[in-house]
Image (cartoon, rainbow, N blue to C red; front, side, top):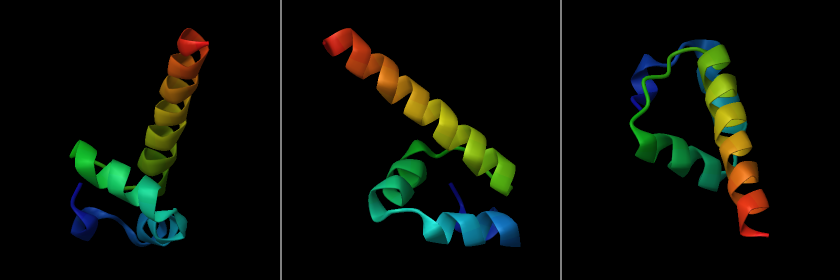
Length: 57
């Protein structure tokens, strides 16, 4: 992900995330530009993580 392509609302939201969340987003290389993009990406990522945890139990 290119931080320079984030709009101001997306950048403000990104700046509130934990370092681990920021790193995870950056490593994906996802094309995100808006706050809505970031929120959807995080919701999907968290849903995937919950599915993995359920399958491991």
